[in-house]
Length: 160
Length: 328
Image (cartoon, rainbow over all chains, first blue to last red; front, side, top):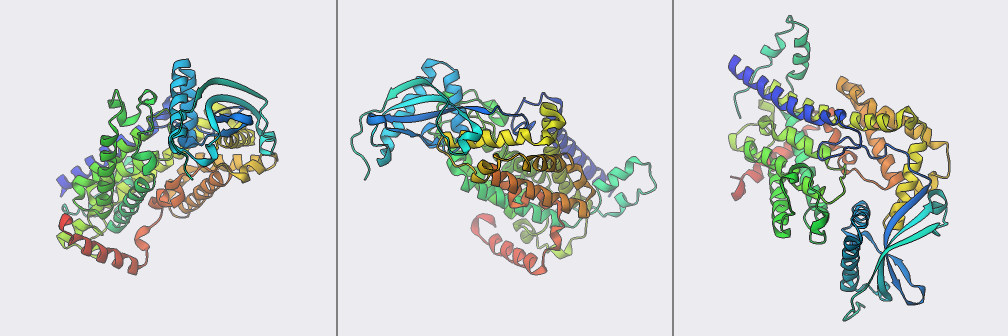
């Protein structure tokens, strides 16, 4: 019985010390040094500026056609993943930005969504907005910077 | 099932030195059904989550290899896996998580399911964006998966051994894994509070940081054509709600150790956490599915007090499942 109890104690203490110690360890790290599955949970911890610079991928066409491309054209269905992909691609330089632009343009052509039929180009842009004004309905950008622009490959057919 | 350890040896140390008090609390005997139900809930959640989130957990064909920034277990890789292999590991993880929930060959499937989930979620977080929705689920799976006693009752293994849940006495081995799960939950929330204190100080509770975060988040999502919360977009026009939200967030996060007191304290904290996540969902359209489901907080509740009919139903279901060819 004592031996079983000691085994139980050893198992319980070793497992708990390992997991609790690992989970608490990020408290000793700089708060922005995030990881997985051990995290400092830094999200929502710092103030954001009133002017928000947002990167996005736009579909552009003749006659002023312009549409924001959904995250699935950039990376996958997750908005944050798409934003991160845009940010890192542009930060990595022209070549990387162009590569991503061309991948997005190829997806626009492949998906052939009717609402994007007028699209002839894709542009990766950073636009600045006043956050509160934007949420009040004033969506006009305060500034816009085009990082890269690329052509949408010619489509063979458009979905109906 | 290994030989049960009677509660007496641990409980009989009452006259020993004060440090033993912690041991008595940590190794206090608990009902087998509580741990088993926790296994069932967490394993079922993992299975459903893996299936429901398959577009982002199983399919990486649209991710450029140059975006690969491995974290967690995926840090063992220099380059991404082939998409077929990544899918196969996800599929294996689904099966293992299901077996984890059922408590089938749990001594093997328990740890394997936890490690597989750690792999799948690590891989998912290795594309330039670390999400915070999977951390607690993975840690809870690791804790329960490391406790073979989690399948002593209400499991396929128990049916195979002919053990009914009512026939197993309370025991130390059923308590510590549940307390470990609670400890991991508490640490996660306290760390989130500490990060806010380190990065913004007590000023965070005044609400302006939260307000700017909600506005910033909504604009970024709207600008990439994604869903954002209209409620959050409307609320940021006003100052007054945010000091309340800020103070409440600090109470929930830094007050998490209150859950360790158990009883009504634990229940009150669990309700506050649920409210907090409902608030995050409503104002930022960010869902933390595991806490929102309530299952992340299930270790704080005496699950074994569920209606007897529910327990009987689960035992009957396990009996039927134990007859399936693959689980015999």
